Length: 270
Image: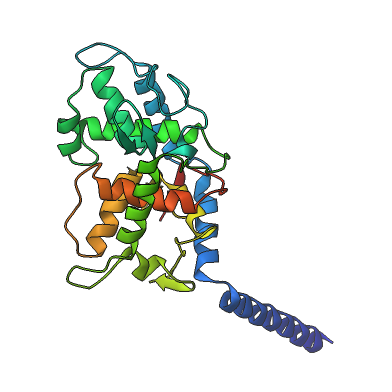
């Protein structure tokens, strides 16, 4: 009887091992990464950047010793909630289509007296660029769970969408890459990570709609401008200038494609 019980126990254990092996085989790399992110979601370090950004929004700074509380992000002076999910958009006062980061720089210039050109030249993660990332994280977080709905009424908004679409599929550089090389088809992946198709929804709901995000691998908070810079690096292209037309145009293209996707920012990435 003792031997029979031992044999039954071994058989049961073997069955569990086989079941676990089958489950491991059927689970995609994306599922594993999603579980990893879920485990890290509690206590996401981006909350620290949110808090810093909120303080910077209200703090009187710059040559004019003023706050950003009257900054118009597209929904009226000082209105934050819902602004992020409608950016980039056209702004009459600057005569340009702007994303969140470039619009914040405009407000830092006009309201606080900062030099926007100097901020644009500052490396990511340093000085006012670090402050800008925190501000963008705070603003974006205020639209969490809202759906993306970028405007396309103005002629420049339509023009930027067309430019962004062209840039997305443009191949070049030493590797003859484009954005679409990685993000233009279904079922692609790099290393263990599945690559979403960003030419349509819901693919862009997990692409454009996921930044700003905290990067665990390097302990940094990344806004969309830095994320696009890193894409250009991987394509072996020269880095675009901060806030250049091509980066904003790509954001318009991806943002319009993300229409209806729910914003989960700030997210956490590998």
